[in-house]
Each structure stands twice: as structure tokens, then as C-alpha cells.
Amino acid sequence: MRTDYLDMVLLHWPFGNYYHAWRELEKLQKEGKIRAIGVSNFDPDRLIDLIEFNEVVPAVNQIETHLFCQRKIEGEWLKKYCVAHQAYAPLGQGRVNEMFELVDVNEIATAHRKTPAQVLLRFLVQRGIAVIPKSCHMDRMKENIDIFDFALMEEQMNVLAAIDRAIPLIGDAENPENTEFAMTW
Ligand SMILES: NC(=O)c1ccc[n+]([C@@H]2O[C@H](COP(=O)([O-])OP(=O)(O)OC[C@H]3O[C@@H](n4cnc5c(N)ncnc54)[C@H](OP(=O)(O)O)[C@@H]3O)[C@@H](O)[C@H]2O)c1
Image (cartoon, protein in one colour):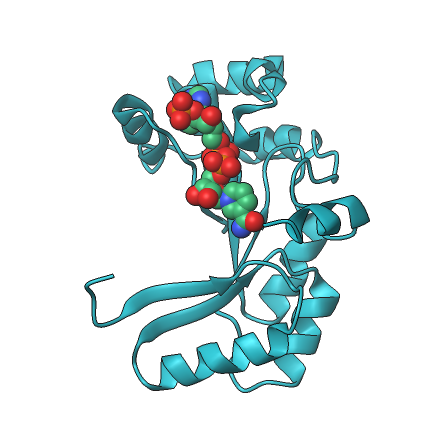
């Protein structure tokens, strides 16, 4: 990798001997080879278990989070254990175009002279969630980072909060088919 250290390394899923993997990450962090270590796709029960039986509390839990799967309950557990909530697929992987088409989202976007994507990202950031949208297009990358010069009003936050379906589209840790699929990687 041609670098002396990595900023952050995450355990992708709580599968296999992830306790051993976590302890190896703890060692690498102590040696200064990784600055921060964290996890991904950990439901609250797995996260609490990992925290209770290890030294280092994960800096981050990267979980699928977007308008249709807002992770309100998981977010409260992350706050309680001081683990940063990081949203993957914050735009629903672009699969759910419906998210961009929703009247509520578009009305709020128009009111702030912003795009639907910017509203979707701002909504999460304003809840204290870190977002990592992906785009192959420079104009969209600029658009996605340009969300810090406006704020959604409480009423707008409430409208968006009510759209939650609370079901992951991609990263459902409780779905055995998902687990089987992960074993093929
Ligand atoms: N930890 C995990 O298990 C896990 C799982 C999934 C993803 N991730 C990570 O999460 C990050 C983002 O997730 P993701 O790529 O799956 O989903 P995402 O960021 O929600 O969506 C990406 C899609 O949205 C489109 N898009 C981006 N900006 C847009 C904009 N302003 N307007 C309209 N469309 C826009 C992109 O198209 P264009 O590229 O054509 O612009 C792409 O098709 C990635 O770094 C990924 O590696 C982690």
C-alpha cells in the first residue's frame, strides 16, 4: 500500500472468527499501523458483546442507513456506547429511484434550492450520522459534499423521519440468505 499506517480499518461483518480478527486489529492499532479500528454490519447485540469482552471500543459501526432504513433504534445504541454511526448506501445505492422522486423530498429540496440527493444526505448528517455516498461523476461528488450551507427545519426533519420503513435493502444482518451470500466472497 506504500504507506506507514492506515487511517481506519473496519471488520466487514460479524462472521467467522471475528473476535480473533478484532484482537489482531487491536494489536495493529497499538503498534501505530492503524489509527482507528471499527466494525460494519454489527447489530447492537453483536456490538455490545464485542465491546464487553475486548479492550478497544470500535470507533465506528458502518451500517446501511438511508431515508427508507433510518436505523433509529440502532443509532440510540451506538450513542450509548460512543460508537460513531456511519451510513453506507446513504442514497439507497441509487437502486431505489423512488427515494429521489418522492414529493416530500423534492418539495424540501426546492425550498432550500438543493437537489433531492443533498436533502437525503443532509437529513442523515443533521441526525449526527456520517455519510459516505459513492459517485463516479465529479459533478455529483461536488453536489454530495455541498450540504453544509443549509439546515433542514424541525418540521422537515419530522416529515423525512416519518418515511422510515426500518428494513434494510442490502445489509440485513438477520437474513440467512444474506449470510450465505457473504460466505461466497
Ligand atoms: N460495509 C458494507 O457492507 C457496505 C455495503 C455497501 C456499500 N458500502 C460502501 O458505502 C459507500 C456508498 O454506498 P453505495 O455505493 O453502495 O451506495 P450510495 O452511495 O447510496 O449510492 C451510490 C449510487 O448513487 C448514485 N449517486 C451518487 N450521487 C448521486 C447524486 N448526487 N444524484 C443521483 N445519484 C447519485 C451513484 O451513481 P454514479 O456513480 O453514477 O454517480 C450510485 O449509483 C461505498 O463506499 C461502499 O463501498 C459498504
